[in-house]
Image (cartoon, rainbow, N blue to C red; front, top):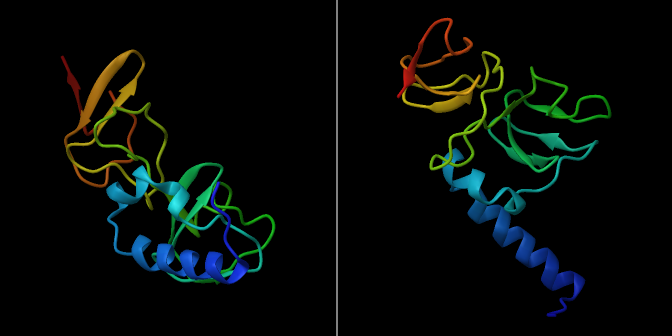
Length: 134
């Protein structure tokens, strides 16, 4: 196992952070471990991405984080990136207006595969804005 000094580790983290911001959400979702873990007491800027409970989130509003404002609880501050791997069809989860499904996104729901036929789709498959894929 390679061991790094604290100074080397800090330099590597800086390089990883610099590289991570250049990734699209789809690319970033393949490597959530590149992103720093959410922590309380950190000033987050809009668009910053953090890893929380092995899921990737994007910051929606600039803020300084605090206990109780974790990404999965503070939906006005964070949006989970819902289609982490475009080659895998995930289970549908109820999105909010901050992280809707986009036209062409596919999900599994109630034993079927569905494709969003509209952008900014927050509806449940079978209700509106989805086509069942045969």
